[in-house]
Image (cartoon, rainbow, N blue to C red; front, top):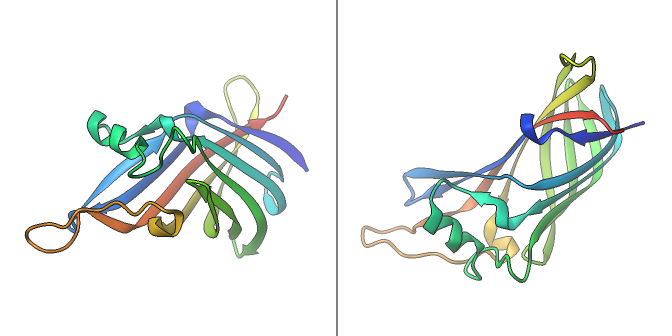
Length: 174
């Protein structure tokens, strides 16, 4: 197996959640660390760990981002990181199913993600890189993210399911 580092300039950790039951709020986390030990074309048996800085959340709305960092949601002061550690990666055709421990707001739950290997290439500096897409869904209430507001028209402000999407480009670790 080979050690890889995530190239933050060419990667993204994103999410979306229903807003007012009719639209979506999308956001990203811009500061994170990841360690990956894997064979570039076969993730089975890979060791994958992510550590995301909650303070780096961005939904392109300053007030909403501050609310998401507050105790109503992530409580970034007390729980500054979201972590994920893969426990099992199973190959299914050209794709993988990755199961591991996801921790948000001090609560750890199993989470499953679909992983697509996008291929490898050589960048302009002669370094071989690999790329993956990762998709999954978790219920925010399972992690203590329970704040909501009833709407006058019925329904609630924030949906329960958080869709998670990562676009990862990894470079060999030095």
